Length: 123
Image (cartoon, helix red, strand yellow):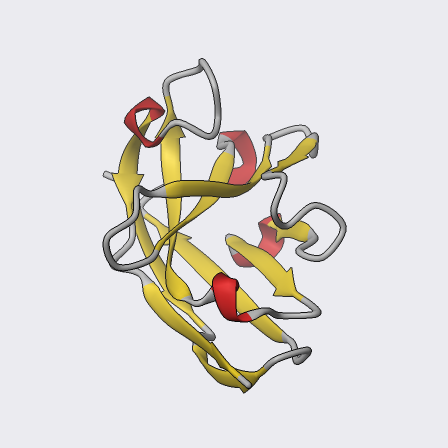
């Protein structure tokens, strides 16, 4: 079974940058489409970015242009480069695999999840 581990979270000031990593084990990611989600306290899980197995990308409206997603298949790792961070970007960030097709931004369409990494943005 595919297992995912997120890393790279932390605390940063408004306007700063962080790079999150999602390392996959149990299978090669070459044939997997992977998504990043985030969830803040009291809010629903929100789709942040998506990268398909053939490198097509999609982004949530709130991060479009700021959070490029990339993949390095040789390392079985997906990256989320977060730039120009804002307070509202503070959340637990998760990566997900096992896409069952359908809308990528719906958490129900993914079978496999990591434990998450916390991102806190303060002024």
